[in-house]
Image 1: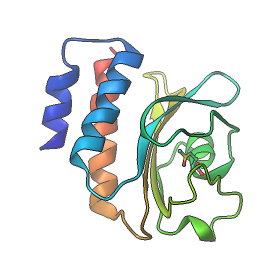
Image 2 (image 1 turned 60 degrees about the vertical axis):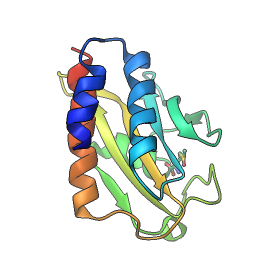
Image 3 (image 1 turned 90 degrees about the vertical axis):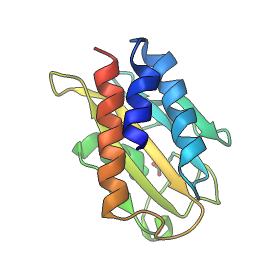
Length: 145
Ligand code: SME
């Protein structure tokens, strides 16, 4: 199970960038049919790209903009079956068609950033993927403590 592997991989380290980099690489290696996965971290003003796998991405995303900005502003996971139906979607990679974005919060509830997984086909993610990614995101957050 991927969450266990993530726990083992991140267990001995608390550095955010180091763990984010290994976490993104692990998901990229194990999750089929995705074209991008990675982090955006909140700098107090907007989202700034962090460690990821896939093609080079947009660096800064304003809160409420696109799927990532919506996840960050609402603190709710965004599961988008077809990004072409989303007004204001940010097409970093024109190949991305569906997205799953999990908000990441500090222990005090404040915004740390988002975990973003994109796929080149519509409808790639379902409720099970959502639960899986939310669980994985918790493993990442726990590793920072
Ligand atoms: N598509 C995202 C932007 C980030 S990337 O795709 C890497 C969005 O609309 O939030």
